[in-house]
Image 1: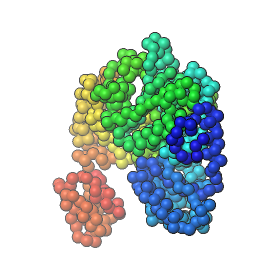
Image 2: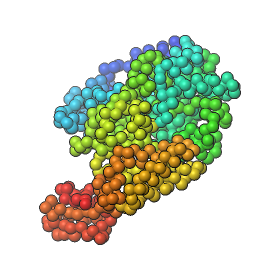
Image 3: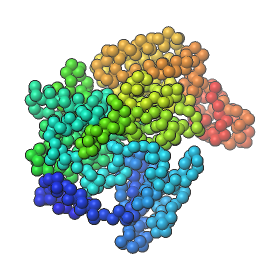
Image 4: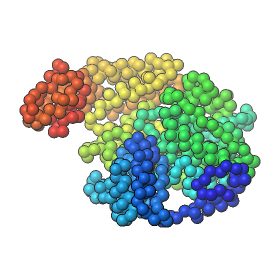
Length: 633
């Protein structure tokens, strides 16, 4: 039996039964002191970008020099993303659970001295509630975490994703052992059906029904059958799948193995975009460790079942998130979608039955097998069971990763967990479902966030991106942004997408310049519906959603652009001018120094003025001014 935290290197240490797995878990847990101080440092992509690796190194250096007695020297653990991305780098000191935010390397010595030696908090690094101004000491008491129900994310932020011993200690691979020793493949499929799990990649197709259809196809066509992880997360503002792959890669891998067991697959693929290097690295480590432990490869847990998988790197094409384009990419061909005359469960990879689910869907599978379909079906609402992970970004105080039961209201996510819009204003709209989703207005803030309710509102669940907008966001500009994105990412294979999206964008470009008429709004709607009806794949058929929902809920703002030649949000450059209020201007000259067009004049400590003819309308003056003197007309 291996020592806890060490990688196996010889076959005699391979796990050969559920008893071996349980014994290893008990050994790992017994060797750990739950009261030993531990410094947990977030090493998700966001915190790494903000310097968390330097913070970790500073802790190692400071602890070496601190003189703390060896028996109480704190452990240092690096984990995946904790979710509260706007507060990183994050450091948690356990077992008390002290939560430190925005930690820099120069803060480390103080944390070591005050917290680890003197057992006192460093108050300036604690979280302060923006509404009550109260200090909050522990992670679990912060509203951002307290109001969530972390099911899929339950291990992330607690385990080291590069150490399989951490995963096993936390209960990893227990579901696999249970399935291989006490469940038939048919029973695993039945559990998926009864759980009500729907695919988390966007379409929301029932997972159990997809697996059942694949089994029916296998009976007709025979084997081989393939299982595939869709990790090609390309929606702007979305980072749920990336976080799961980075922070708990074994959960994804275990789910994939369980799917392979249920369907009788011997080969699987994890399709991950190359822009996710940390996710790929952690998946590669997890797969290598699982093979060493006998949890992946030949004769898994001595059950007679063999399965292995490999990683395919996507080249960043958004369209490759679509199933048929993803399959052609894995096959070594250009990632173009193909007509879905036959479903992928019947003819997927190389024309064989194939089950494709996204990362979050696969990560749910072990939880359902281990805890039971009845438990899972009790979460969320009927027809949208379980929880959903969302990336909450945009004009919101608490930016990060959120997991809630299906069916909670939009207001609960944005205003309670997200802390609302900066400045206390109501949000204008929330874009759900990525560039192919729609904008839900503030008037519908009580809309339940589930598959059917979002569809009824004209939007979609998508992969789970939520982009919050306030009154400084222009719906015409938002529509232009998403259409430009989809126009560039379209493969151009079908006429509705190739020409239709370009024409939609051109009409919106005219709107942003105040050119057009009310008839153009009707034309936009008609063209959008034609694209929806005629596009080859889901990229094209869902692309008009942002335009249709903004016309539906914000038609007056469209009319203001073409009828009044005004942009109410002050965004569209051709319809606005900048001016300086002489009553508010202090003559600090900051705006003049930053202006790239050198169009701001005025003496020091005297009111300044903007030459509208020279002004580029770049907005730097407004961003620079600390006194609110720069106004938009």
